[in-house]
Amino acid sequence: MTFDASTCCAPRRGADNVPAAPHPALTGRVQHDDVLLPGGHFAMGDSFDEGLPGDGEGPVHEVELSPFRIDRTCVTNEQFATFVAETGYVTEAEKFGNSSVFAPAVLAGTSDVIGTAGSAWWLIVRGACWRHPFGPQSDLTDMADHPAVHLSHSDALAYCGWSGRALPTEAEWEYAARGGLAGRRFPWGDELEQDGQHHANVWQGTFPQYNSAADGWLATAPVRTYEPNTYGLYQMVGNVWEWCADWFGPSYYRTSQSRDPQGPETGQARVVRGGSYLCHHSYCRRYRVAARSANTPNSSTGNLGFRTVFRHLAPAA
Image (cartoon, rainbow, N blue to C red):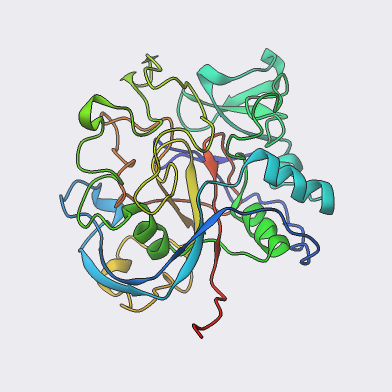
């Protein structure tokens, strides 16, 4: 087992992949509370020049999007459990037999902690998966409304194939996250704790030694914690990273098409957006709406989930 930790945010699996199961056919539906967004023009990218150079958050460029529907929240444990119950799907973390868990949250015996994933705060834990998010001694009790985690890009696509939905493109994700607030850092404005309020589940304290959990959460929070943005979407930043459809390219914004961009044609890692409960200003500040990161498609961690979109909209009468 090899892991690559090119970022502090979420470790990566190496190339020793387990073949992904075929995407389940559309056999069932799960309730998705989503919002219709009209599309249109918006300025995509980092207006403050705050991103890491290798993340490629610039230049700011004009994008035009077609209308689409997007989930108000990340896919929850309850939703993912329905998918698994109907299809018998086995996630990549379950096939590998392990996944990456943030060290202070691990619930496992010492024999089940089989290494570190590139940094001391990420542990490779035997038996960690969506059913056991903190290790084999954890379960989903009282976590039905938390985001499903330890899901690879292939796992997310399998769920989408079953539910008749799709992963958002990176442009769709940022347009939705901004909630119509042009050029702002966050979905609510420019200050992380605007008006003295917690607006997102991110790290408080000194990373990684001490988390005061002043926002109420050490790890994941329920998906409808905090106020939604002006589009009615919850936790577009913080809580968990969200897979997007696009391959990642650090220079893509320089050549991106202006209409419904799809990302590079090929790549080695897929885009993830939104940051997570581990984000802190002392490291990468990737909890901003313009922030970008990426992970290999077979990777799974305790802070990585997804939300879905629906694009096949009937034309207006």
